[in-house]
Amino acid sequence: MTVPAAPTPSDGAEDDIAALAKGGRTNVIGFGLRLAARLPFLFIAGRVYGPEIVGRFAIAVLVVELAALLATLGLKRGLAQALAATDRPHAHVVWDALAVALILSLIASGVLFVFPEIMYPNSQVIGLERLLPLVVFAVACSDVSLAALAYRHNVKAAVTARAVIEPWTISIAAWGLSYVSSRDGLIIAYVLSMAAALGASIVPFVKSYGLPAGWRPHLTPMFALARQNAPLAGADAIEWGTRNVDRFILGLVFPPAVVGIYYMAQQVASLPQKLKTSFDPVLGPVITHRLSENDRAAVAAQIRQVGFWIMAAQAALALIGGIPAEGVMGVVGPEFVAGSGALCFLLLAEVLAANGAVAEAGLVYVARHRNLMLSLAVIGLQVALTFVLLFVARQLAWPQGWAAAMPAVALALSLGVGSILKSRLLARLLGAPVSAWRWPWAWAVLATSLVGWAFVQLPKRLEWLELSAGIPAMLLVYGVILWRWAFKREDRALFARKPTPETMPQRSV
Image (cartoon, rainbow, N blue to C red):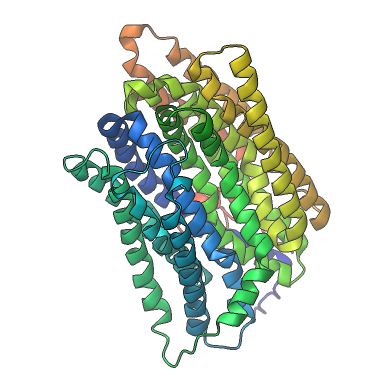
């Protein structure tokens, strides 16, 4: 008889990689769907509404999303811990969390409704813009619902809500409403998209957890959890702030049209950043499970693995978006070509931030207060650099397009510094390296850059080839080099429908 082998530590590592790979495949599909839906919105917003309306919309949405983020009070990350530690029915706990998010979002909505100037610091409140804060509750409750579903490893719901329903709703609504009101169309489209995303979140939430039969709200423990998770909420808010404070500063210094151009560059550059956030639902539970077993080496391995996947994907998107930047921004509209420089630095910032952003997924559990302090230092550095670079640009009388790119330069520099500091801190705490760096990846970037540069040098009459042929050629070169020289067995598991002995690490004997 063959006696089954006893479980080994590597068995758990294989399970972790399998879970991460499964979540990664789902989220890559979601990213592709989000990209396919987001591009029509950018085209419609740029070509139909123009930079000024887009700029007003960009600042207003920024404030609304910050209010919704604060309304969740860290429940997006802390809810998993609450569910793991409670003896109450899980349905009751998640409905408590929804009730807290609803109460806080209504308070935030009330403040913004009374003081709408917060949303429009550089222009007058007009039309239906005062009603925009009413959507805060939809954003917050959707986030909490998806966090509850993620605890049960339902990533598909987040992909459906965030990558299909939300972007396609805003794209279609923005196009249809442009015939009704070119002034309020974008705002109304955004409200409709958030309402649709809420519906797409609540329906699977109710199917999974059910209605709270016999539920009596225990809001005091949930508020206590929110206070306990204040560092998590702060980390979420600061991470969000690093990607948006530059836009707010621009809104204070430049007219709405300049903000609109920068916002479009941000939207293109933020697509890679969503790769990291889409991994949070699957990475968080895996990390907390390993930490509960005090297996810190496994946590470091997970951080390295996901960090490389995200860094490699973000670099690919940075190359195909940054090298032909003028062509990419020109697709949105001729007025937006001035944002090409900002786009390049914003894409670079996402690559530099990748390792630190993934390291933060571990730091929020093992050193949440130190992580919060580091995040505060990074955003402080970013704000200071932004004002300094804008001052220098004005003193040197640089063109407005160059000056408007300075916040992106400050973002890239500060995120690079933050990434180094957070990775080193986590490596020291875990006692194992967490860096995702691999030399073959650097050669892939260099080779792809040379191919892209060659296409950019084409004569003006052949400019159309920059995007139609240049992007596929760059992706081909990049992918071949990565697959042949940079990928390991664990990486190939990301592309296998079911992990096999050939795609997974070998068990120790």
